[in-house]
Image (cartoon, rainbow, N blue to C red; front, side, top):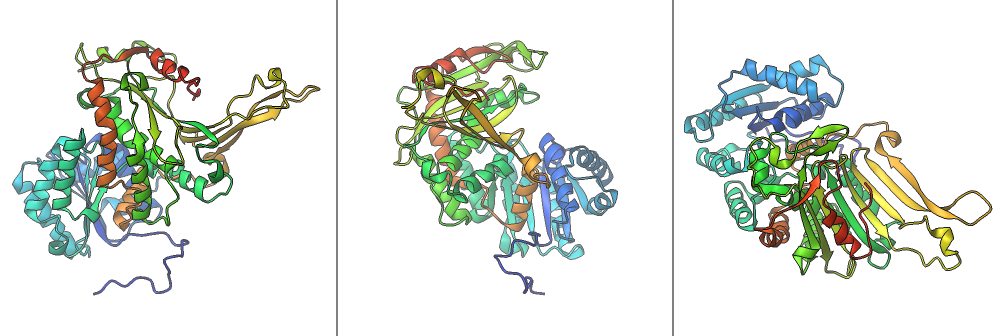
Length: 508
């Protein structure tokens, strides 16, 4: 029977939620950390909010030799621990009845043949018209192996399946430009390019999407969002934790490849992009790509960037070991756990405005924020002593935690003199809205299932981001990172980099 949409609903009507067609979500690496902590709870929360279709199935694929019952108990524990919405046993029971587990390794042809047969069976039994999304919750090195298996079995073929087939790939997408190009070519050959979803979970965060609302839905900010009024922009991603259990991956990649190449350059693109003609995915990505192409790295990378590596210290009152003392890290490792770089954007809007981007582990606290620092007023009628306590006007977008926006500006101190100092207007999501923000993965999984690619970078954006990172990595090769104690805001050289230009890092 031909699928007919609701005749009473128009594309402009936003009151009804978007609900996918009947489909399967196939999770490779379903017993791993990402799946347990993020994906399974996100699926439960979507079901709890009534956003999944009745014909919805989760197929888990992993090496462990488990049955459906064992998988269901693992999923139950994961969903209950990670759920954002209230726990409802009836919702879980309905969802769990649609869970299946297929054991096998990625080089096991028989296991993939069995997976293909299972999908075919579901089409008949659950009324799923060949629709399936494949989620790669697996190490990047395994991507080609799984892609080739999906090609061999025909599972990636829309025509053969009789519905849509989509693939979700996690970052890091490659580890330099050449590997990213090769991976893009492979994934676009196996799946059609429009069915490839390269996930960057930062783009699923409400506060990141709010950048577009803040800029383009208000006439207050956009007129001053340019080099005439903006002194500089600082983008910070600080973590108080170390590398956890990711030693092998982290030591091979480092801070720049891990998050600067994806999360932070995506934040920079959203802050700096021109207004798109619409929020159509292609229009938004076209504007982001223009920004990424206009990024200028420092002429002298040794002066315009800093790498750091944490030493033992104290974080939040607890003793923290140094990076070289972490489990499975070589004693002579030169991998950076901190990176800061001064970038420029070569277009008329941002000419001469520095974008300072930094990322670090074992910092005093966890915070991700974007700070727009405006130029200082000339202060002509004021006595210099009266404005000593006045800094730059700042608009700070807090991505996590304490999500919200802070506007910092000067105000007169009560009293008989004209003394001016900084005060802050603080908007917090948790206080302004009664509805709590969905988890990033909730939004992104739903977008994949309904086929909305707005929040997913395409191949050109990924490759352009590597064009920024590769020259930095080449210049850093063979150098030792600057030490900084755990619990400090990075190496002293990072402060000196800004001090040379008469600026300082904002205290996050």
